[in-house]
Structure formats: structure tokens, C-alpha cells
Image 1 (spheres, rainbow, N blue to C red):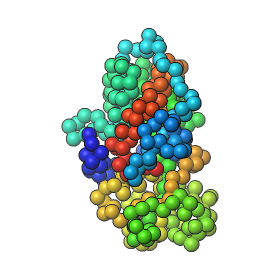
Image 2 (cartoon, rainbow, N blue to C red):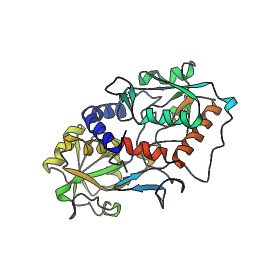
Image 3 (cartoon, rainbow, N blue to C red):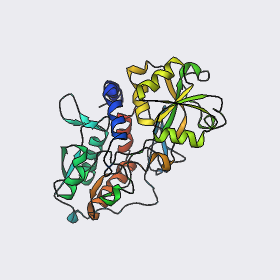
Image 4 (tube, rainbow, N blue to C red):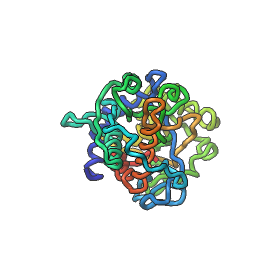
Length: 323
């Protein structure tokens, strides 16, 4: 799939994606939980087009990297691995995992699972099941690895072991293009979005979320207006009721890339990554104690990053970068 084709796929998924992402963020069982949002740590120099600070820079797209080049996982002992890896995922979490037009599993997580299997040169299967059944499938030996946006949290660590994180979604500000500096398509620099720089602005946010808590704690001088849901929040921005909105980077990137935004708006400033508010990110979950598989998956992830495969998959599913 080309990047252009992926852009069309993501746009077509927009209407479905936003409510499903919102539901997952707000109504998951204690363990596992859907991944809360944060941002990447330094990426290895070996990544294609890598820039200082560990973000691979391609035209208008920042690709996050989560793997430390100084900590290289050992090559796995294939004799310690099963003859096949049985992955499980969900079908209600676009663009990470969903059913395509042909009914087959598709999405970023699905492509990552396939790439892992190719890297390890091992046969794999992928089964769709409800989110709430994932941990039980691991515990009961019905599956080996769950790649379904499971959040790495202290609570979820009590029930499963995780690979290194492979994705995080930061918080982002979005503003109307007509209000941005000259050259409206450009993003404002990260330095422009500070408590002082937007103290006179009105910022919209979905009420009762970590994003609202973050704003009220760190942007106390800014006028903060809470809205009940994403649709109301985005409508307020388009109408000019607020100067900026603040929320989850994935949801906002999907909206900006889709037809519903009508190209009205753009990211302003850079990502906000505080784990206290937005979490540690996503990892592949395995049954507790399955260290051989966990380390093998970590090795595969590090290789996918160094070889540029992760970058290609990220660009396929996030043509407007979350970062």
C-alpha cells in the first residue's frame, strides 16, 4: 500500500475511528486498559533520515522512535520459541486494528505483527477477539501475544508482561488555519505553545479527561472551556468559539486528515509527553513469565526500527503525524 492509498484509507475510517477511540480511552476494564497517551523517547541513529533527538524527519512528517541504540536486545534462541506465534487483536480500534473492506484484519497493529513474524522468520496466526478476552486468552494458553493497544500501567503489569513500548500518542494543540501565522499550512513552533504564550487564549478540551487535568494544572492562566465530546469540541473550534483545542494526538490527526475537518485546522506547536497525564504507551502483552517470547519480540522491534520498516508502517497509517 502506498502512502497516498493509506491517506485515503485513513480518511475513509475517520467517522468510525473517532468514537471508537474515544470509547476505548474512557471505558476499558482495569486490566488490561487501552493505551493512554504520551510520546517517544530517543530513537537510534540507524533509523533512516534520523535527526538529532531520535525523530526521523521526512517531509512534513515526524516519525517517533522508542528504541535505544545503546541497548540492543540479544538475538533470540529460536529453539526457545514456539513453532508459531499466535497473535490476538481486536477489530474496533482503527487505525490500529479493524476489519478492512474484504473482511480481513487490517491496521497498524496488524502490519506490525506481520513484520515481527517476517523478522523472526516464524509462522504466525492472528485471531480477532473482544478486548476484554485478551488477557484470559494469554493465561489459558489460547494465544501467545496480544497486540491490541493495551496500555502499559502498574495495574496491567500485574496480569501480563509487556514488550518495550512500540507506540505512544502525545497530546496536541490544534488551531484554525486562518488564525495561524502567514503560511497557514505550517505548524507553529513548539516554543510558541507555552503557558505564557497562550495565557490570553481560550482553549477547548473534552471535560473529565487527562487532557483537561493537564491544562488546568499547567496552563492555569488560560481560559479553559470543557465540552462533552469530540464532536462538540471540534465544532467549537471551527465556529471560532475557542482559539485552540487540546486533545489526543491520534484522534486529532485522524480528524485533520479526514474530510470532516474540511482542511480547516492544523496542529499548533509540538507534542506534550508527560507520562503522569498521558501514560507510558502501548506494548505487546504476553503471558507472565514468558521471557523468551517477550525478549524475542523486543529484538524484532529493534530490528524493524533499524531497518526502516517501522518508519514505513508508521507513514502508511499516520500520513499526518501524531507528533
